[in-house]
Length: 313
Ligand code: COA
Ligand code: ZN
Image (cartoon, rainbow, N blue to C red):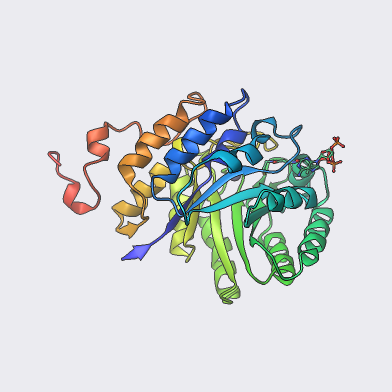
């Protein structure tokens, strides 16, 4: 059976978009509930300036206190060397280093030029010597920038090249930060990227937002181009506070439904995920999104594939 990995990012991308502070206990309970759904990887939080993202200032405490299944891969996002240092000190072995493709978004997000951010990444990564954690380089605004509009594919490819030169063992997340990508754009970019880097050390992931309702369609197109890791957030929460006009991540439960319905296994317990997504959405109901949670639950849980199309199913 074909497979895809859905990477759950609600505890980072989802929670960071919520203004009122979510109590640490609530975050831990939701993370533990999500971990029990069968995800292989969770993006748990970030080590960023608490002035920039006050909501995630308790990431260290969460890492210490959450009781998570053995073997679950835990990732945290960092924007600079200080974040990397803090993540490593907290025992994290999987790092997401975020840099935007567009100058304006990188400046708004991390107060640096793209070149400065890349220079800092290259120096910090080389400085780690041989004992490196696993790396995901998250390239934000690969399709659209709130200030600069459509982002040239050549700019993305240039930064992919620079990433691989500094870190030949890397997962590169191609991010539609604003949710303005369309399937033909996703297909065009991955159509150029996927055949270009056949090295086993370089893999690609797709991180999308559902601002215009194209989240699932874009994810399916990424899959069609060969991408096998797709990010989603339970309950459709999410969004970069420094990307005006961006709504939540594509809902994990919508992605799981779409893939499983097409016979592509996710390894996720859909019933448990729907409950977890309901719970996540309760932290900010007005910001939550996604479709399948709204479907009468019995219908949503009736199974996947052609056999379940009958009215009685
Ligand atoms: N974690 C915690 N604190 C950090 C930090 C980190 N990774 N990096 C810097 N700081 C602290 C510094 O220690 C300094 O503290 P002080 O004022 O007490 O001395 C302060 O932040 C300013 O440091 P500076 O390097 O000048 O940062 P800046 O003001 O230029 O901001 C970032 C740069 C990257 C720290 C900030 O823009 C940021 O955290 N952005 C993250 C945005 C984000 O998470 N977006 C959503 C995900 S895409
Ligand atoms: Zn995002």
